[in-house]
Length: 256
Image (tube, rainbow, N blue to C red; front, side, top):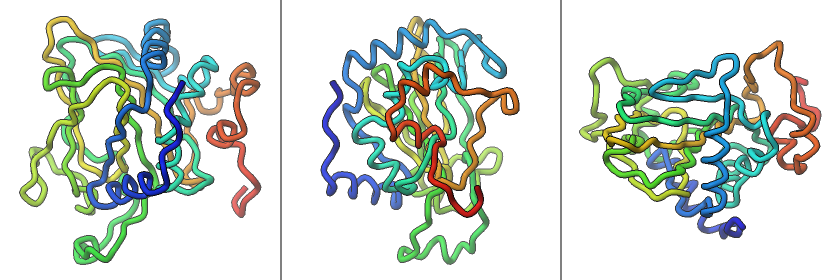
């Protein structure tokens, strides 16, 4: 069984971390059975459309392949924080599974999405709270040490107002630091944060990772293969009401 939902003060503290640091690390979100089930399911995935295999195996829209993946969309502790950050009507814009094998080279320091350009003076004002539009959750299915592809983050860099330029590896004197954690921990970070992947320097271990991308209601869902995408009826039949909302079943709004 999953842990119970966190207290309101704990969620509020994690929300403050998203505003001040750009990320929050949630310990022990997944239990051993959930970790084992996700790893086994990743081993059984086959590539479709834009999926690929090699030194890294990457699979998109896994929520639509088997009802098993639904419970990883609204995990206690994680979903409360996503809703606090992005609104009670937020939804999922992606769920991807990864296997990064020995020799894998991670992504350089980058920013996923900058909503709009803002004056540097505004971003540097501690009284200004930059709203979030998209957040990504990394669900770690291995113990992450320095050798096993740790995610690198620069705390506070979401307030840079831009992404890093080629060769840039610091922001305001801060370098990227690895997120070292246990299997079952979850890192939630906002789309403006400067972050990087890193190499798999182990001789014989593959890093298993599940990502969930959450967004505000008015950020479009982009499920590949797009015009040819259809929801799996077995998945929809297994959804809870909250999971149906996360997959796009919303109340009518101004732009629908």
